[in-house]
Amino acid sequence: MQINTAAMALCIAFAAPVHAQTQFQGQVPRPGQAAPEPGQPREPQHAVLVDRIVAVVGKEVVTQSELAERRDFAERQLRRQGTPLPDRMLLERQILDRLIIDKAQLQLARDSGIRVEELQLDRALERVAENNSMSLAAFRRALEKDGVPYERFREEVRQQIQMQRLREREVDDRIEVSDAEIDQFLAEAKAGGSARSEYNLAHVLVRLPEQASPEQLDAARKKAERARAEALAGTDFAKVAASYSDAPDALQGGAMGWRSENRLPELFANAVKGMKTGEVSGVLRSPGGFHVLKVIERRGSGEEGAPVQQTRARHILIRTSEVVSEADARRRLADLRERIVTGGADFGELARLNSADGSASRGGELGWLLPGDTVPDFERAMDALKVGEISQPVKSPFGWHLIQVEERRAAGVSPERRRMQARQAIKERKSEEAYQDWLRQLRDRTYVELRLEDK
Image 1: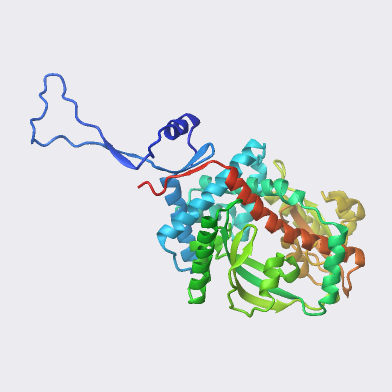
Image 2: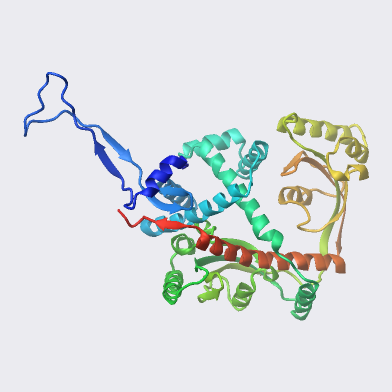
Protein backbone atom coordinates (compact mmCIF):
# COMPACT_ATOMS: atom_id res chain seq x y z
CA MET A 1 0.00 0.00 0.00
CA GLN A 2 1.52 3.31 -1.04
CA ILE A 3 1.15 6.26 1.30
CA ASN A 4 1.74 9.80 0.12
CA THR A 5 4.89 11.42 1.46
CA ALA A 6 3.19 14.15 3.43
CA ALA A 7 0.84 11.80 5.24
CA MET A 8 3.65 9.36 5.91
CA ALA A 9 5.89 12.06 7.37
CA LEU A 10 3.05 13.22 9.60
CA CYS A 11 2.53 9.69 10.93
CA ILE A 12 6.23 9.12 11.60
CA ALA A 13 6.64 12.48 13.32
CA PHE A 14 4.63 11.35 16.33
CA ALA A 15 6.64 9.47 18.92
CA ALA A 16 3.65 7.39 19.97
CA PRO A 17 2.64 4.59 17.59
CA VAL A 18 -0.52 5.02 15.57
CA HIS A 19 -3.02 2.43 16.74
CA ALA A 20 -6.13 1.17 15.02
CA GLN A 21 -8.84 3.16 16.70
CA THR A 22 -12.36 4.39 16.20
CA GLN A 23 -12.94 8.11 16.08
CA PHE A 24 -16.46 9.15 17.08
CA GLN A 25 -18.03 12.28 15.73
CA GLY A 26 -20.43 13.64 18.34
CA GLN A 27 -23.65 15.31 17.36
CA VAL A 28 -23.52 19.09 17.37
CA PRO A 29 -26.84 20.74 18.33
CA ARG A 30 -28.48 22.58 15.47
CA PRO A 31 -29.42 26.25 16.04
CA GLY A 32 -32.38 26.41 18.35
CA GLN A 33 -32.00 22.80 19.38
CA ALA A 34 -30.98 21.97 22.92
CA ALA A 35 -28.21 19.51 23.60
CA PRO A 36 -29.43 16.14 24.90
CA GLU A 37 -29.83 15.95 28.61
CA PRO A 38 -27.37 13.71 30.50
CA GLY A 39 -28.57 10.13 30.40
CA GLN A 40 -30.75 10.65 27.34
CA PRO A 41 -29.90 8.54 24.23
CA ARG A 42 -27.84 10.30 21.59
CA GLU A 43 -28.24 10.01 17.85
CA PRO A 44 -26.11 7.28 16.17
CA GLN A 45 -22.44 8.14 15.86
CA HIS A 46 -20.30 7.51 12.77
CA ALA A 47 -17.18 5.34 13.14
CA VAL A 48 -14.06 6.02 11.07
CA LEU A 49 -11.37 3.31 11.11
CA VAL A 50 -7.79 4.55 11.10
CA ASP A 51 -5.20 2.13 9.70
CA ARG A 52 -2.31 1.32 11.99
CA ILE A 53 1.42 1.43 11.20
CA VAL A 54 3.22 -1.78 12.19
CA ALA A 55 6.67 -0.88 10.81
CA VAL A 56 8.58 2.06 9.39
CA VAL A 57 11.05 1.08 6.65
CA GLY A 58 13.26 3.91 5.42
CA LYS A 59 10.91 6.36 3.70
CA GLU A 60 7.88 4.06 3.75
CA VAL A 61 5.62 2.30 6.21
CA VAL A 62 3.97 -1.11 6.54
CA THR A 63 0.36 -0.86 7.66
CA GLN A 64 -1.75 -3.36 9.56
CA SER A 65 -4.08 -3.76 6.58
CA GLU A 66 -1.15 -4.46 4.24
CA LEU A 67 0.23 -7.05 6.64
CA ALA A 68 -3.20 -8.66 7.09
CA GLU A 69 -3.73 -8.82 3.33
CA ARG A 70 -0.36 -10.55 2.81
CA ARG A 71 -1.07 -12.93 5.69
CA ASP A 72 -4.49 -13.88 4.31
CA PHE A 73 -3.01 -14.46 0.86
CA ALA A 74 -0.24 -16.60 2.36
CA GLU A 75 -2.75 -18.70 4.26
CA ARG A 76 -4.77 -19.31 1.09
CA GLN A 77 -1.58 -20.27 -0.73
CA LEU A 78 -0.54 -22.70 2.01
CA ARG A 79 -4.00 -24.29 2.01
CA ARG A 80 -3.85 -24.82 -1.76
CA GLN A 81 -0.45 -26.47 -1.34
CA GLY A 82 -1.87 -28.73 1.35
CA THR A 83 0.53 -27.28 3.93
CA PRO A 84 -0.73 -27.17 7.53
CA LEU A 85 -1.06 -23.58 8.66
CA PRO A 86 1.53 -22.37 11.17
CA ASP A 87 0.64 -20.38 14.25
CA ARG A 88 -0.84 -17.11 12.98
CA MET A 89 1.41 -14.93 15.14
CA LEU A 90 4.52 -16.74 13.85
CA LEU A 91 3.34 -16.46 10.25
CA GLU A 92 2.52 -12.78 10.66
CA ARG A 93 5.97 -12.07 12.07
CA GLN A 94 7.64 -13.95 9.19
CA ILE A 95 5.59 -12.04 6.62
CA LEU A 96 6.43 -8.71 8.25
CA ASP A 97 10.14 -9.53 8.04
CA ARG A 98 9.76 -10.30 4.32
CA LEU A 99 7.79 -7.11 3.73
CA ILE A 100 10.59 -5.13 5.36
CA ILE A 101 13.24 -6.76 3.16
CA ASP A 102 11.12 -6.25 0.04
CA LYS A 103 10.48 -2.58 0.79
CA ALA A 104 14.18 -2.00 1.43
CA GLN A 105 15.04 -3.56 -1.94
CA LEU A 106 12.33 -1.65 -3.80
CA GLN A 107 13.41 1.68 -2.35
CA LEU A 108 16.98 0.99 -3.48
CA ALA A 109 15.76 -0.13 -6.92
CA ARG A 110 13.70 3.06 -7.38
CA ASP A 111 16.51 5.26 -6.10
CA SER A 112 18.85 3.52 -8.57
CA GLY A 113 16.56 4.21 -11.51
CA ILE A 114 15.43 0.61 -12.10
CA ARG A 115 12.14 0.72 -13.99
CA VAL A 116 9.95 -1.86 -15.72
CA GLU A 117 8.36 -0.88 -19.04
CA GLU A 118 4.67 -1.64 -19.49
CA LEU A 119 5.31 -3.93 -22.47
CA GLN A 120 7.86 -5.96 -20.48
CA LEU A 121 5.38 -6.24 -17.63
CA ASP A 122 2.62 -7.39 -20.01
CA ARG A 123 4.86 -10.15 -21.35
CA ALA A 124 5.82 -11.26 -17.86
CA LEU A 125 2.15 -11.53 -16.89
CA GLU A 126 1.43 -13.57 -20.02
CA ARG A 127 4.21 -16.00 -19.04
CA VAL A 128 2.77 -16.31 -15.53
CA ALA A 129 -0.65 -17.13 -17.00
CA GLU A 130 0.86 -19.66 -19.41
CA ASN A 131 2.77 -21.34 -16.58
CA ASN A 132 -0.63 -21.84 -14.95
CA SER A 133 -2.04 -23.27 -18.23
CA MET A 134 -4.44 -20.34 -18.64
CA SER A 135 -5.04 -17.47 -20.98
CA LEU A 136 -4.35 -14.07 -19.46
CA ALA A 137 -8.09 -13.35 -19.28
CA ALA A 138 -8.78 -16.66 -17.50
CA PHE A 139 -5.88 -16.07 -15.12
CA ARG A 140 -7.24 -12.62 -14.30
CA ARG A 141 -10.66 -14.09 -13.51
CA ALA A 142 -9.04 -16.77 -11.32
CA LEU A 143 -7.15 -14.11 -9.37
CA GLU A 144 -10.23 -12.01 -8.76
CA LYS A 145 -12.22 -15.09 -7.74
CA ASP A 146 -9.50 -15.70 -5.16
CA GLY A 147 -9.93 -12.15 -3.86
CA VAL A 148 -6.72 -10.79 -5.44
CA PRO A 149 -7.29 -7.59 -7.48
CA TYR A 150 -5.57 -7.90 -10.86
CA GLU A 151 -3.96 -4.46 -10.66
CA ARG A 152 -2.51 -5.35 -7.27
CA PHE A 153 -1.08 -8.59 -8.68
CA ARG A 154 0.29 -6.68 -11.66
CA GLU A 155 2.12 -4.33 -9.31
CA GLU A 156 3.50 -7.30 -7.36
CA VAL A 157 4.95 -8.76 -10.58
CA ARG A 158 6.48 -5.38 -11.42
CA GLN A 159 8.14 -5.28 -8.02
CA GLN A 160 9.47 -8.84 -8.38
CA ILE A 161 11.09 -7.89 -11.70
CA GLN A 162 12.61 -4.79 -10.12
CA MET A 163 14.07 -6.83 -7.25
CA GLN A 164 15.45 -9.44 -9.67
CA ARG A 165 17.17 -6.73 -11.72
CA LEU A 166 18.53 -5.20 -8.53
CA ARG A 167 19.96 -8.57 -7.50
CA GLU A 168 21.57 -9.01 -10.91
CA ARG A 169 23.19 -5.59 -10.71
CA GLU A 170 24.21 -5.57 -7.06
CA VAL A 171 25.17 -9.25 -6.65
CA ASP A 172 25.26 -11.52 -9.70
CA ASP A 173 27.14 -9.17 -12.04
CA ARG A 174 29.84 -8.61 -9.41
CA ILE A 175 30.70 -12.27 -8.87
CA GLU A 176 34.07 -13.22 -10.33
CA VAL A 177 35.33 -16.74 -10.99
CA SER A 178 39.07 -17.23 -11.46
CA ASP A 179 40.79 -19.81 -13.67
CA ALA A 180 42.34 -21.28 -10.51
CA GLU A 181 38.86 -21.89 -9.06
CA ILE A 182 37.78 -23.61 -12.27
CA ASP A 183 40.90 -25.79 -12.25
CA GLN A 184 40.26 -26.81 -8.65
CA PHE A 185 36.57 -27.49 -9.36
CA LEU A 186 37.38 -29.77 -12.32
CA ALA A 187 40.12 -31.56 -10.37
CA GLU A 188 37.75 -32.25 -7.48
CA ALA A 189 35.06 -33.48 -9.89
CA LYS A 190 37.55 -35.87 -11.51
CA ALA A 191 38.82 -37.11 -8.16
CA GLY A 192 35.24 -37.66 -7.00
CA GLY A 193 34.80 -40.40 -9.58
CA SER A 194 31.44 -41.51 -10.87
CA ALA A 195 29.06 -40.82 -8.01
CA ARG A 196 27.87 -37.25 -8.36
CA SER A 197 24.41 -36.81 -6.87
CA GLU A 198 21.51 -34.45 -7.31
CA TYR A 199 19.34 -33.42 -4.38
CA ASN A 200 15.82 -32.07 -4.08
CA LEU A 201 16.17 -29.97 -0.94
CA ALA A 202 14.07 -27.80 1.34
CA HIS A 203 15.59 -25.48 3.90
CA VAL A 204 15.03 -23.07 6.75
CA LEU A 205 17.18 -19.96 7.09
CA VAL A 206 17.34 -17.95 10.29
CA ARG A 207 19.11 -14.77 9.21
CA LEU A 208 21.64 -12.94 11.40
CA PRO A 209 22.47 -9.22 11.36
CA GLU A 210 25.92 -8.36 10.04
CA GLN A 211 27.47 -7.68 13.46
CA ALA A 212 25.32 -9.88 15.65
CA SER A 213 25.67 -9.61 19.41
CA PRO A 214 26.06 -12.76 21.53
CA GLU A 215 22.40 -12.41 22.53
CA GLN A 216 21.30 -12.22 18.89
CA LEU A 217 23.45 -15.24 18.02
CA ASP A 218 21.94 -17.24 20.86
CA ALA A 219 18.36 -16.26 19.96
CA ALA A 220 18.88 -17.14 16.27
CA ARG A 221 20.48 -20.48 17.12
CA LYS A 222 17.61 -21.37 19.45
CA LYS A 223 15.09 -20.44 16.77
CA ALA A 224 16.85 -22.75 14.27
CA GLU A 225 16.97 -25.52 16.88
CA ARG A 226 13.21 -25.17 17.47
CA ALA A 227 12.62 -25.45 13.74
CA ARG A 228 14.79 -28.58 13.55
CA ALA A 229 13.09 -30.12 16.58
CA GLU A 230 9.66 -29.64 15.01
CA ALA A 231 10.85 -31.17 11.74
CA LEU A 232 12.35 -34.18 13.58
CA ALA A 233 9.08 -34.60 15.51
CA GLY A 234 7.25 -35.10 12.22
CA THR A 235 5.82 -31.64 11.59
CA ASP A 236 5.38 -30.97 7.89
CA PHE A 237 8.64 -29.29 6.79
CA ALA A 238 6.70 -26.80 4.65
CA LYS A 239 4.88 -25.66 7.78
CA VAL A 240 8.19 -25.39 9.64
CA ALA A 241 9.64 -23.24 6.83
CA ALA A 242 6.58 -20.97 6.78
CA SER A 243 6.83 -20.53 10.55
CA TYR A 244 10.56 -19.98 10.99
CA SER A 245 12.42 -19.31 7.73
CA ASP A 246 13.65 -15.87 6.71
CA ALA A 247 14.37 -17.07 3.14
CA PRO A 248 12.28 -15.74 0.23
CA ASP A 249 11.03 -19.28 -0.52
CA ALA A 250 9.60 -19.84 2.98
CA LEU A 251 5.97 -19.83 1.81
CA GLN A 252 6.87 -22.39 -0.86
CA GLY A 253 7.90 -24.80 1.88
CA GLY A 254 11.53 -23.69 1.71
CA ALA A 255 11.82 -25.65 -1.55
CA MET A 256 15.16 -25.23 -3.32
CA GLY A 257 14.29 -27.71 -6.08
CA TRP A 258 16.74 -30.11 -7.70
CA ARG A 259 20.38 -29.07 -7.41
CA SER A 260 23.43 -31.04 -8.44
CA GLU A 261 26.02 -31.38 -5.71
CA ASN A 262 28.43 -29.00 -7.42
CA ARG A 263 25.78 -26.29 -7.63
CA LEU A 264 25.02 -26.29 -3.92
CA PRO A 265 26.75 -23.93 -1.51
CA GLU A 266 29.75 -25.81 -0.13
CA LEU A 267 28.25 -25.85 3.37
CA PHE A 268 25.12 -27.57 2.04
CA ALA A 269 27.00 -29.96 -0.25
CA ASN A 270 29.13 -31.23 2.62
CA ALA A 271 26.11 -31.61 4.91
CA VAL A 272 23.89 -33.63 2.55
CA LYS A 273 26.51 -36.08 1.25
CA GLY A 274 25.78 -38.61 3.95
CA MET A 275 22.06 -37.92 4.28
CA LYS A 276 19.25 -40.17 3.06
CA THR A 277 15.90 -39.20 1.60
CA GLY A 278 13.67 -37.72 4.31
CA GLU A 279 16.51 -36.91 6.71
CA VAL A 280 16.91 -33.54 8.40
CA SER A 281 20.33 -31.99 8.93
CA GLY A 282 21.73 -30.55 12.08
CA VAL A 283 21.78 -26.78 12.55
CA LEU A 284 24.38 -25.37 10.13
CA ARG A 285 26.12 -22.04 10.58
CA SER A 286 27.07 -19.76 7.69
CA PRO A 287 28.09 -16.08 7.67
CA GLY A 288 24.45 -15.24 6.86
CA GLY A 289 22.81 -17.17 9.68
CA PHE A 290 21.69 -20.66 10.69
CA HIS A 291 20.27 -23.28 8.34
CA VAL A 292 18.33 -26.53 8.60
CA LEU A 293 18.11 -28.76 5.50
CA LYS A 294 15.81 -31.62 4.57
CA VAL A 295 16.53 -34.05 1.72
CA ILE A 296 13.22 -34.53 -0.07
CA GLU A 297 14.74 -36.80 -2.75
CA ARG A 298 18.14 -37.67 -4.12
CA ARG A 299 19.35 -39.32 -7.29
CA GLY A 300 22.56 -40.07 -9.15
CA SER A 301 23.35 -37.77 -12.03
CA GLY A 302 25.60 -40.20 -13.85
CA GLU A 303 29.33 -40.35 -14.22
CA GLU A 304 31.34 -37.20 -14.41
CA GLY A 305 32.32 -36.76 -18.03
CA ALA A 306 29.81 -39.34 -19.31
CA PRO A 307 28.29 -38.67 -22.78
CA VAL A 308 25.20 -36.47 -22.81
CA GLN A 309 22.45 -36.06 -25.40
CA GLN A 310 23.05 -33.17 -27.75
CA THR A 311 20.55 -31.79 -30.24
CA ARG A 312 21.24 -29.94 -33.48
CA ALA A 313 18.30 -27.67 -34.17
CA ARG A 314 17.18 -24.60 -36.07
CA HIS A 315 14.31 -22.19 -35.53
CA ILE A 316 12.34 -19.22 -36.79
CA LEU A 317 11.59 -16.51 -34.23
CA ILE A 318 8.77 -13.95 -34.43
CA ARG A 319 8.95 -11.33 -31.70
CA THR A 320 5.78 -9.71 -30.38
CA SER A 321 5.55 -5.93 -30.07
CA GLU A 322 3.05 -3.11 -30.08
CA VAL A 323 2.42 -3.80 -33.76
CA VAL A 324 2.79 -7.63 -33.71
CA SER A 325 0.33 -9.23 -31.30
CA GLU A 326 0.56 -12.72 -29.83
CA ALA A 327 -2.16 -13.89 -32.22
CA ASP A 328 -0.34 -12.35 -35.21
CA ALA A 329 2.92 -14.09 -34.28
CA ARG A 330 1.23 -17.48 -33.88
CA ARG A 331 -0.66 -17.06 -37.16
CA ARG A 332 2.46 -16.11 -39.10
CA LEU A 333 4.35 -19.12 -37.78
CA ALA A 334 1.42 -21.45 -38.45
CA ASP A 335 1.39 -20.20 -42.07
CA LEU A 336 5.16 -20.75 -42.39
CA ARG A 337 4.85 -24.24 -40.95
CA GLU A 338 2.08 -25.07 -43.43
CA ARG A 339 4.29 -23.87 -46.32
CA ILE A 340 7.13 -26.12 -45.14
CA VAL A 341 5.14 -29.23 -44.26
CA THR A 342 2.66 -29.31 -47.15
CA GLY A 343 4.17 -26.93 -49.68
CA GLY A 344 7.76 -28.12 -49.61
CA ALA A 345 9.21 -24.70 -48.75
CA ASP A 346 12.77 -24.66 -47.42
CA PHE A 347 12.99 -24.07 -43.65
CA GLY A 348 16.35 -22.33 -43.89
CA GLU A 349 15.21 -19.92 -46.58
CA LEU A 350 12.07 -18.98 -44.66
CA ALA A 351 14.21 -18.44 -41.53
CA ARG A 352 16.48 -16.06 -43.45
CA LEU A 353 13.47 -14.08 -44.67
CA ASN A 354 11.31 -14.09 -41.54
CA SER A 355 13.25 -14.84 -38.35
CA ALA A 356 13.95 -11.99 -35.92
CA ASP A 357 16.83 -13.92 -34.34
CA GLY A 358 20.55 -13.42 -34.98
CA SER A 359 20.62 -16.93 -36.41
CA ALA A 360 18.49 -15.84 -39.41
CA SER A 361 21.53 -15.32 -41.63
CA ARG A 362 22.48 -18.96 -40.97
CA GLY A 363 19.02 -20.22 -41.89
CA GLY A 364 18.01 -20.38 -38.23
CA GLU A 365 20.83 -22.80 -37.34
CA LEU A 366 21.56 -22.98 -33.60
CA GLY A 367 24.25 -25.65 -33.79
CA TRP A 368 24.64 -28.44 -31.25
CA LEU A 369 22.72 -27.72 -28.04
CA LEU A 370 23.29 -29.29 -24.64
CA PRO A 371 20.73 -29.49 -21.80
CA GLY A 372 20.40 -26.03 -20.27
CA ASP A 373 21.61 -24.12 -23.33
CA THR A 374 18.15 -22.74 -24.10
CA VAL A 375 15.29 -21.44 -21.97
CA PRO A 376 13.07 -24.16 -20.43
CA ASP A 377 10.03 -23.54 -22.70
CA PHE A 378 12.15 -23.91 -25.83
CA GLU A 379 14.05 -26.93 -24.51
CA ARG A 380 10.90 -28.82 -23.50
CA ALA A 381 9.37 -28.34 -26.95
CA MET A 382 12.62 -29.27 -28.70
CA ASP A 383 13.12 -32.43 -26.62
CA ALA A 384 9.59 -33.61 -27.48
CA LEU A 385 10.32 -33.56 -31.24
CA LYS A 386 11.59 -36.44 -33.36
CA VAL A 387 14.47 -35.90 -35.74
CA GLY A 388 13.18 -33.98 -38.77
CA GLU A 389 9.94 -32.96 -37.06
CA ILE A 390 8.79 -29.32 -36.96
CA SER A 391 7.02 -28.03 -33.87
CA GLN A 392 3.80 -26.10 -33.66
CA PRO A 393 4.35 -22.43 -32.65
CA VAL A 394 6.14 -22.39 -29.26
CA LYS A 395 6.11 -19.46 -26.82
CA SER A 396 9.24 -18.42 -24.92
CA PRO A 397 10.30 -15.20 -23.16
CA PHE A 398 11.80 -14.06 -26.49
CA GLY A 399 8.69 -14.49 -28.62
CA TRP A 400 7.23 -17.33 -30.72
CA HIS A 401 9.26 -20.05 -32.44
CA LEU A 402 9.07 -22.80 -35.01
CA ILE A 403 11.64 -25.43 -34.08
CA GLN A 404 13.06 -28.23 -36.19
CA VAL A 405 15.32 -30.97 -34.80
CA GLU A 406 17.90 -31.93 -37.43
CA GLU A 407 20.03 -34.45 -35.57
CA ARG A 408 20.77 -35.95 -32.16
CA ARG A 409 23.84 -37.57 -30.69
CA ALA A 410 25.31 -38.74 -27.41
CA ALA A 411 28.74 -37.22 -27.06
CA GLY A 412 31.25 -36.08 -24.53
CA VAL A 413 31.62 -32.44 -23.63
CA SER A 414 34.62 -30.55 -24.98
CA PRO A 415 37.21 -29.24 -22.49
CA GLU A 416 36.20 -25.67 -23.34
CA ARG A 417 32.56 -26.45 -22.71
CA ARG A 418 33.40 -28.24 -19.46
CA ARG A 419 35.24 -25.17 -18.21
CA MET A 420 32.27 -22.98 -19.12
CA GLN A 421 29.93 -25.30 -17.18
CA ALA A 422 32.31 -25.27 -14.23
CA ARG A 423 32.39 -21.46 -14.28
CA GLN A 424 28.58 -21.36 -14.26
CA ALA A 425 28.34 -23.89 -11.40
CA ILE A 426 30.83 -21.93 -9.29
CA LYS A 427 29.00 -18.68 -10.02
CA GLU A 428 25.66 -20.21 -8.98
CA ARG A 429 27.22 -21.51 -5.77
CA LYS A 430 28.68 -18.11 -4.96
CA SER A 431 25.56 -16.22 -6.02
CA GLU A 432 23.18 -17.58 -3.40
CA GLU A 433 25.68 -17.06 -0.58
CA ALA A 434 26.49 -13.53 -1.82
CA TYR A 435 22.81 -12.66 -2.18
CA GLN A 436 21.93 -13.69 1.37
CA ASP A 437 24.92 -11.72 2.66
CA TRP A 438 23.87 -8.66 0.61
CA LEU A 439 20.29 -8.88 1.93
CA ARG A 440 21.60 -8.97 5.49
CA GLN A 441 23.74 -5.89 4.89
CA LEU A 442 20.84 -4.06 3.21
CA ARG A 443 18.55 -4.89 6.15
CA ASP A 444 21.15 -3.66 8.63
CA ARG A 445 21.69 -0.30 6.93
CA THR A 446 17.99 0.39 6.36
CA TYR A 447 16.21 2.35 9.06
CA VAL A 448 13.53 0.05 10.51
CA GLU A 449 11.19 0.80 13.39
CA LEU A 450 8.96 -2.11 14.47
CA ARG A 451 5.58 -1.33 15.99
CA LEU A 452 3.90 -4.72 15.74
CA GLU A 453 4.01 -5.19 19.51
CA ASP A 454 2.24 -1.89 20.15
CA LYS A 455 -1.30 -3.21 20.14
